[in-house]
Length: 380
Image (tube, rainbow, N blue to C red; front, side):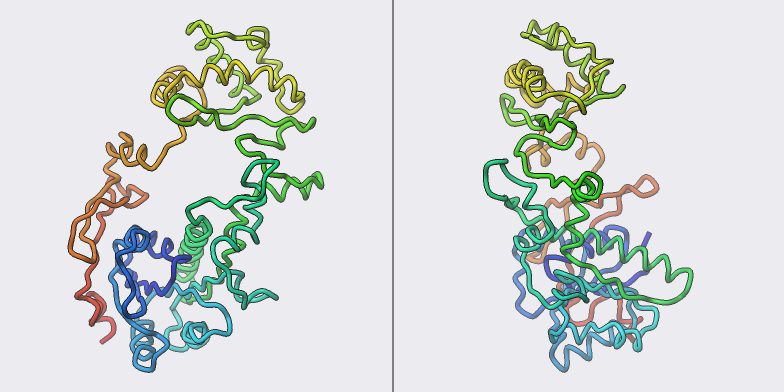
């Protein structure tokens, strides 16, 4: 889809995914890193597979000249740069647009290029806090929590890729490049876009509830979302409406056929069940026999039977589960590519199958560090 497009990826962790997405879609992506960058980190390898590494200090005189040569022939530049820094001067849009009016510059920073916090630094934990995500994560009676693996960086990178593609579409129409200003804080806030709605409409502030979901009942009742099972956790929630009725009826039938204790489930008319009006005592009584039933199942047993019966729900996959997932295997998602040390490793393939084919991964090409193979004709 993006064959023939040249992207200069000058980003740090908060922009790595943007370049990876563009590479997956066929663009030639050159990953510009400071000299002596450690490329053995699994995170670097996962997000930068398919790009051509190039050691270049863009803030040095010689490195700046080389970068400008590349930018003059490129379609996009992805850069992480806070205003007021030396790197920001290198990636200044007006300066680069004078070199290449068709250039799209995707500028990623913690809080955006304007506003009172534009020059502030922020790591993942600060961005998760500033965006409101931490206030919704954790137990109701505990402190805010941060997911152990950084989440703000891939959210920011994904939004940067979307912005880049929108700008590219505009350039196809107008012939002009433009600046895409990506805020890490705003990107993470999009991940919980439902939460501000509660404040806008009801002036209620959603709060963290651990394994439960709040905001579905006018009575304030909470519903369990994650359920322990024999070998992990399941994701399931009591729904209303026609879809919820079918799921709930199918689950009760399954429990009945398995001779499980139904309790109050046996008496419920699901066509009249309205989760928005239920009281907490009612929900607790309904969920108790479900909890006892799920605890006896394995994740695979739940998945196969839920699929057969048309029940909404899914096992909570671990990394090991994902690595062995038969659906991903059947669709050829996993691909092998040569790493920066020359070894072949298994990687996540492109997220999209295009015209029946998943674009193949390109391995690293360290010999390109001197001249960025594939761009010499353009630069010349």
